[in-house]
Length: 154
Image 1: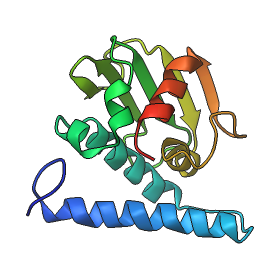
Image 2 (image 1 turned 45 degrees about the vertical axis):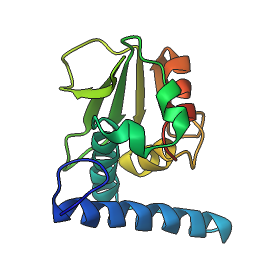
Image 3 (image 1 turned 60 degrees about the horizontal axis):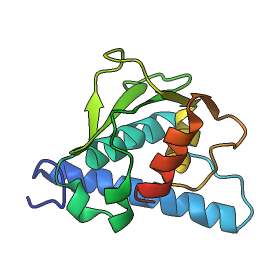
Image 4 (image 1 turned 180 degrees about the vertical axis):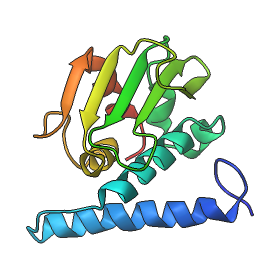
């Protein structure tokens, strides 16, 4: 099955649909003044899916033109799901000239580490909450993460 990025498999669209539904639900709940809630395991899976899609080589042509201006000088971002129970729980993003690449966690020292429960990481990566939101901890060069958030798809 055709996909805009990633492997041409039907599961891509199921995951994309879950991602979109989850984010739109958060948006609607926030607009209604309801405290948004996402299932932690589902949120972590969607964080992994989001980062896999962004790190796919064909993503540059799919995303916003700002994506092309993302830092690409070898910086590394470690995204860690605190209290992870089911998924990988950590993702290491390496920003290289050809674009972001997902590395095995532990395969390099990160320039910045962002830690939060999965249900906060997903809205952070989709720019629904700021990096300074309660429950999100950043160590290292916060400017690297700020640059990521400024240039990667919302």
